Length: 158
Image (cartoon, rainbow, N blue to C red; front, top):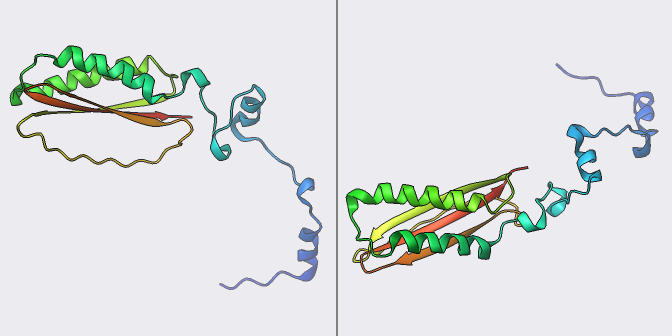
């Protein structure tokens, strides 16, 4: 099916419209949120949490390291119990980190435990996020028997 080309008269009607003549709509109340003083993220992508509740690698590391040291000091590595121990650590760390930040942050905690003699491990992760609001921190612990690697991701959900 072929369309007929528009006539000059039809095109002339659209050329007379200027941008200021077009009605603008605000979808989802975004204008109201901006009027209340919420900050706009990089490139106007969205709103950021208050500065004191934004992700900080230093603050997160200060909360995670004592938990790792307290729970793993003097623990011997056992392959059978390492899964339960990693799960316990991940839950405790996630709860502690969640208390530090704005409620709209999604917290992901990744814990790896292994034995020191076979201490080779390779991990990789990829993600796309806003550098203004999101972030991650990695913490490592080692004693004579085991090592622990913990990576905490904080992703702000608008």
